[in-house]
Length: 369
Image 1 (cartoon, rainbow, N blue to C red):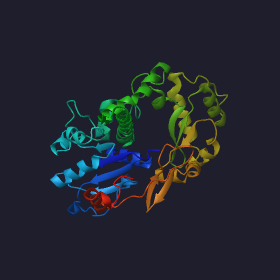
Image 2 (cartoon, one colour):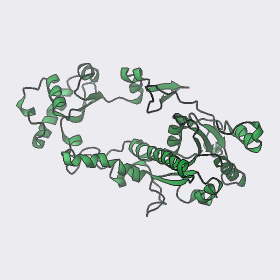
Image 3 (cartoon, rainbow, N blue to C red):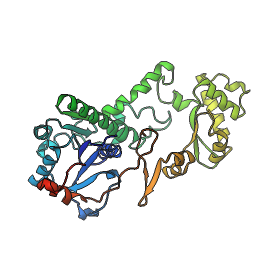
Image 4 (cartoon, rainbow, N blue to C red):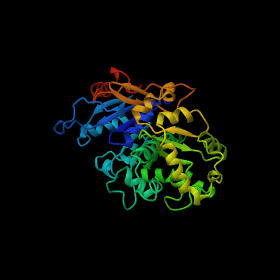
């Protein structure tokens, strides 16, 4: 779907590479500029990064004039650049937005950080759990008696970071094609994860979220919860709507139990949750799957990635695959009902000679696919 889109990625860690991979999965031509290998730290000189699948990889030292010039020549024909340095680093390297957009006025300069390009914390180090803590996105995870638990990388790096950067880059490219002018995209994980709270905030009027952790639908109710099974594995139920709640009670043999008649009586939630905890502990996860899957209970087992890869639904949709011993997931979303197969994982610097040759002599071939 993104065939013809040209992206230069200054490789870093976390959400920037994921964003570039996502665009490559959808058909963009991505050239990943990697740092010279530090073999003293045990890194392989040719090791491939799974987040580089579908990209071309070159190695350049951006602290040298040759490395900087290589990047500037690449962006002359690019639609966008992705970088994930701390604010000011690209400028100190001589590759800030002003310099790059002087070479290519239509360039979309995508900047991926945790705290953003401005603000009191902009220059501070941080990680996924820190950003979602400050944005408020971590607050409602867990229950009243345990510390909030960080859902590693999903809410922050990927949800609040990489995917927002992708949307920003695509929006910037559309605008550049209309106006001929590029833009700087400031994608901060604290911004994106805060924006994702809007759905949660909207549920307050419905009474799903009412106050402190441990008093809300997802952390105290009996009908939207995670339960431990007889074999130590876990299942989830999410029977919020009354028709789904009725089906849950029917399958559990509780339809005529008066204690469960008032679904939204919060005073009874602790007692009802305790009872369902005992009920779900009587059977194994597989036994609950046999009883509740394919019903409107709103049910699913809690699976590890390896287990998820073997689940019949995921197998039928081809969500997971394995390549060279590495478990991977297929690109999303799908178009016209077809699953996409991502490109191969390049070795570090695999395309350096090829790309440098074309830059020095265009007669050697086309730089962009």
